[in-house]
Amino acid sequence: MVTRENNHMAVFAQSVSIGDSVRLPIVGLGTWAVRGRSGQKVIRRALDVGYRHLDTARVYRNEEDVGRAVRDSGIAREDVFITTKLPPDRAGRVPETLSASLAALDTEYVDLWLIHWPPDGAASPETWRALVAARREGRARAIGVSNYSIAQIDELIETTGEVPAVNQVKWSPSLHDPDRLAAHRERDIVLEGYSPFKSTSLRHPTLVEIANAHDVTPAQVVVRWHIQHGIVVIPKTAQLDRLQTNGEVGRFELDAAEMARTDGMSGR
Image 1 (cartoon, rainbow, N blue to C red):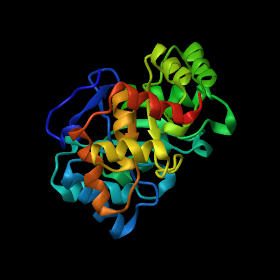
Image 2: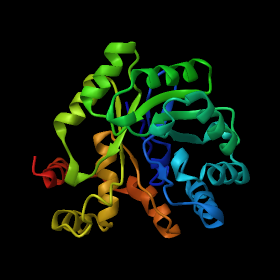
Image 3: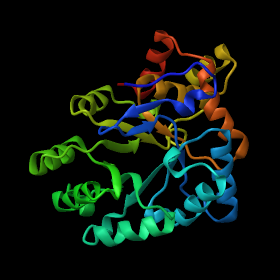
Image 4: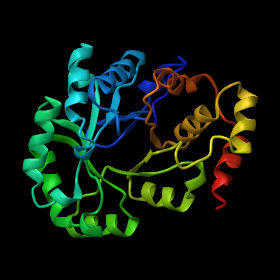
């Protein structure tokens, strides 16, 4: 269930349950290619305007920057949701890799730890069991996968009995697949979408027309569309002005016809 608030910037406070009292903010900041002092500035600004969900990965080489920005923000660690990811080529060294991530982030735990890609293109139940162990040890509050197919997820479930809390995949109106979304929900897995703007043209006439009707930007329509579907969205931006506009999508709502038109951009 998605929590809702009325304040137009309170979209950052909306969240979805991923089990065991863990709630995942529905809008997060993707931090790929956000690093160094300029990256820390972007992350700090995001936290200042209300973001409480930061998405990083070991391969982004910016975990130290994320950790420093959180520490310097003065916001309590427990009030910031941090996701990082295990590189598939480290599938044989899971505990050591998590230790390196925790040290870089300067934290005793991550809120969500994902297998970044299926190792060697396979589901890899052995790797998944190692993530389950990390969760049991309290070093990851929740665990999941990224870029997995439903068949690969089912293999993990059938082999280990443990359901991933999240599957993070590339998602946008142009990639919308209602059957795939339904398959995740049938398994009680939260779908989390990355690259929402890169995989859909913000000049698409449907987005432009809907945006004009609400006096917002096409990018805001895309974010709002994710939220109304209950899909966690993690737009990446290094532009300070766009950080705030992503949080202002609480001031408008797409009606059923606008949602259907946006869904239809995928041609499915």
